[in-house]
Length: 272
View (cartoon, one colour):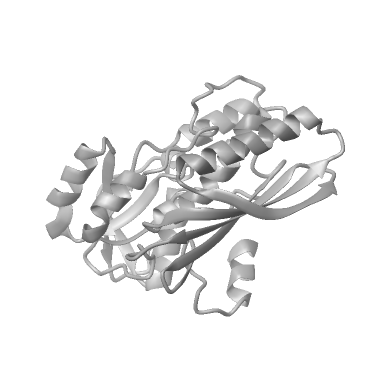
């Protein structure tokens, strides 16, 4: 068990286990976006940092079929950041939140050696999409194309340039697809730690295994920071899911079936 999961397991709460904690019809989620863990300042503009920090947090709400309403933002500000850079960072966060109908209503600031952001999202849903409702016989699928985030991250480490619309900079959230497909989905989560690791999480919490239907290259399965969707649904719903995917221009990739075994993908935490 990696250290992240070990820590999570030490906190006992009925609300822990999904992308967000569901309390009534309100959902609470928070993600950190830390310099030298999730990004390097020399790779990205302040506007790109602010936008991605907000998008990866909004992703938790979107993944659970929730509408983001409010955000609380905490920022550790290094001493070498200029006022102009702070303006670019905050404006980008506010603009991105506004795109999804979300408003920044507060937070905290502190000084630090590096630029660190933590964002809490408060959202609403009458029909949240959970992880714990996976069913035996379900099909497992992911949206979009995976692998580009890992490819571009490796290029940045080599000192190369990547496209401004790279998924590493600009995650694509599948809000319309999840909203329209919700009635046919049995479970779901966003893909932040890679398809292999996140599929293992989904299987672990439901005590199931998988039967692979299509081989997946490691470049696809181990690419983190993708923020596409991992979903499950009954075979009888496949036609309807495909219709929604076509309607919303969402690539859909069925790759496995949920079965009673203990099979898992090989993966490890990419945060260390």
